[in-house]
Structures are given as structure tokens and as C-alpha cells.
Length: 449
Ligand SMILES: *Cc1c(COP(=O)(O)O)cnc(C)c1O
Image (cartoon, rainbow, N blue to C red; front, side, top):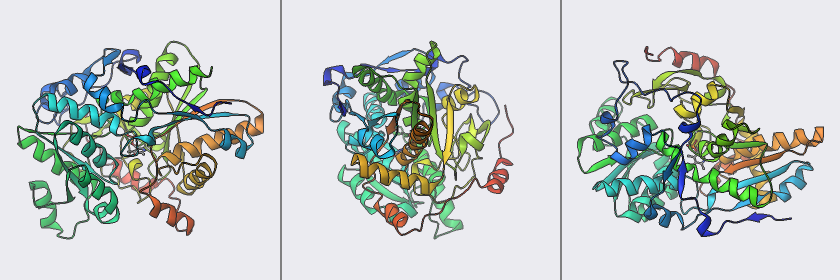
């Protein structure tokens, strides 16, 4: 009974897998404010050429540069586990496997793309990267990656999180990043918000605007995004490629693959390499798990919408709750995004991917059960996948089916102990699908496409 399934360093994938090559229809293009497709040139002010090429590529395999693989080897290949103890606790005939992405220095899957993005920017002669961060996972990942390649990193951290997550802030500084509480006086966007409300607590939308403004105005500075875009999902496919090899080492193949889904990067990362088999006729269900309070795929509309809250980005066709939808302040900060990856949205719309939504208290109950059985304290985002897997494993216990389930443990929860505290104190609420708020926000969808 093998519990921990390891790949050798030499078995780490050499190429990323591009799902576009196996999609039944070409991806929908991003649109400008005039409703016309945005060409790659429009992105050149904030992204390096190699990243833009990847964003629009339809090549099935894209080589991982050796310099990137060398940094990834600090923690990759990541281990795959068979959750024997959890299976026993649930008394289920299902086999449960999980890929452990919490072993990266930042504690999540996000460095997989941060390292690649920092490398391509360094190659292009860029000196500094700007970005936004909410809870701090992405800011930490980019700070780490920038440090590895000698790039300055400037992070706009939403002011309310800046106060609430002091250790994430300090971690970014430890890796050499310059961290500001957003809104700041350093940008037009920040100053305009502060002029209206000097005590503004900030938002992810405002922080994005600040980071993009600096990158767009300085030739030596670019912007980096931690989810949603095609190149980000591409860089995460190393997760699923490794998992496939590890499953086959123990003679297994999943019936169902689960991952938490915010902007879709870790879900795409584990699911897309299995999608390649599905496109070739194999039976496998790929399921994105989201919060009932921010149910983008399960309750949103498939339409063109802005990627940010203010309306500065190109329009992307995606499942959306409306760009000015403000999800309730749930503790899985990484899952509070109004939209989703365009690739995932398109495949979901075509019935090729599945999605479920789970309420907050069930996710924490599941996270605690996982910690007690498997030992790892999961990130609040990751507990969503665990909750969906536990539901399926319990169903198997009732029907006697011995399904093989795989999920992505996207990160650990060591910086989220305040959230666990509130769960233990009985203070966490379940927010149901906020019907009225979503309806109101969907009224503001841009009228194009
Ligand atoms: C950011 C984050 C997520 C959600 O982002 P995706 O792009 O949907 O993967 C999930 N889990 C963890 C631990 C995160 O940090």
C-alpha cells in the first residue's frame, strides 16, 4: 500500500501542455472597447513577447526553458499521495489521491507560473514587475520569482488585507519586494480613489489598476497576473502532467479530477493534461469546485465582460457574475473572483468540464477532517476541492462504487489560522447564492459580442 508517490528529478516534464490544441473550437478572442478583437500588439506595453506568443499559441507542446526548470526543481516534482487515512475515516471504497502543491516555498501552486513569468521578463530586458495581491499568495509567489532572477517586484496589496495579513506582507519583504497598501498616492488611479474616499480600504480592482498603470507608463517595467490568462494556465499544466505519470506508476487512472477554482489556474493546471485523454475518447470527469457565495460557473452568465472591477482590461468571453459584483468576505480569498479563465469557460459551456459549488462551513469541516487524517492543514481555497471529494467518497460508500478520485491540494493554510479560529468559534457564515446582487451586477455587462 504505497502512500507517497514520487517522481525522480529527471522525470520532471520538459514541456507545458497547451489545451488549445485539443479544443473542439478555437478560443474566443479578447475584444477592445470598440468590440473588435484585440491584437497581440495591444498587450506589448505590459507583457514580454514570449508571454504574448504563449497567450495566443495553439501549439500542443511548449518547451519549458532550462533556467525555469532549474528553479522549479527547488520543490518539483511535487509528491502525489494516496489518502489512505482519509479513505478509512470515511469508510469508503473510493480511492482518493491528491497532488500536493503546498510544498513550494510560497506554499501554493502559484510559483509555477511566477517563475516562468519572471524568467521571460528578465530575458526581455525588463527591470521591474508590478502586480496586485489580495490575500498575499500571488504577491509572495512573484516576490520569490523576482528574487530568483534579479528583478525588482512592486506589489499593490489591498489595504484591508495589508492590515489583516501582516505575515504574508513580511514574507514578500523578506524576498525583497516593495509592498504598498493600495490605494496609494503613487498612481493616478490610487489618487482618484483617495480623493473620493481618503479612508478607502481598497479592492483587487483598484490594486490591478495601480499595478497596470505603472507598468504601462514605464518602458523598463511590466505587469504580471497570477491566474485567468491562457499563459498562466499553460504554466500550471506541469501539475497534471506529473500527476498522470505518478498515477500510472501505481497502475491507476482517475474517474474524476477535482480542484478549487477561482480564476481557474490550478484547476486548468491539473485538469488539462487529463482533458487531452478525454479529447482522445477516454472517460474522465473534470470538476471545478467554487464557493456558493461566488458561484461563477454554476450560476454566472457566459458573456463578454471586463477582467477587472473598474473596466480597464480587454473584454473576455467568460462565465461572469458581473465585473462590479462584490462577493461576500469569505475566507477563501483566492476564490472571490467575478469571472473565470476564458479557456475553462468555453470548455465548460461546451459540456466538457463539470462544476460544483460548496458552502463555507462544509469546506472548513472538510479541511479539519483532512488535517486530522492526512496531517496537512489545507488552504481555505483547497478545502473546496476536499469537500467535493468527500461528498463523492461518501456517495461511493452508499452505492459501493470504488471510484478513483484525484484532487489538487493547491496550498497549505499556515497563514490562514485566523480563519480556522473563526470556524472553531462558530463565527463562519454560509452565504447562499446572492441572487439579487448578481442580477444587479449583470445589468452592467458591457454591450458587445
Ligand atoms: C490563488 C489560489 C487559488 C485560486 O486561484 P486559481 O487561479 O483558481 O488556481 C486556489 N488555491 C490557492 C492555495 C491559491 O493561492
